[in-house]
Image (cartoon, rainbow, N blue to C red):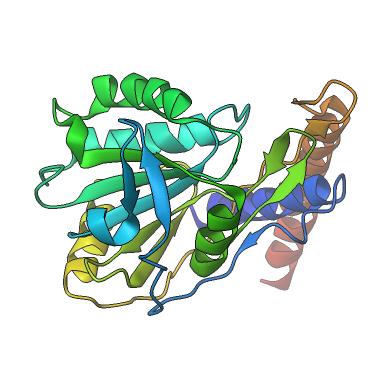
Length: 255
């Protein structure tokens, strides 16, 4: 079991190393600002065309997510991950906590936000769509909120390279925890919401940062890099061979 875990860990590291070599993602990252407050005076437009500030809508523990609505990569899987937590959690959306999704693309409109919300709320919200709010705003406000949250993206044509994470926000607007990836355990999110309710910031123990980086500037789309995948698979199997046929016999000889 430990050997399998070690192999998978090495495979994950190797995959990210090979992928990162294809495109510069050094600017794309999450910089944790635990204990700091997000700017609550920023103005946004909801999917209902209402103009609000973050201070007006953040009045309970909040899951904050950043996406853009035409994303061909991680954004929809991220929202699916949030939706699965909503569906599986014993917390009541809109009462015990809420979800606020902000588009970091200034081209996104409230109409697009409404379409995106309808898709996910109908599937996951248990009938309480008011507990999941979708927001759009201008480029200046996007820059301010994403940098306050430490969510750093990079524009590539009309698309973006971006990390994948959700952020726990307290009722007073304090950042209390970051959860990384596109799938989340309901217990982890419940704990994060409890910490947010208590205004308690906790560091993230495990940080797995996913980045959309398979972008083709000619087609202006994200896609699979076949060479990268083949190279990763070959390297993975070479690593397995080394572990099985080289390291293991040496251990036996030492005994």
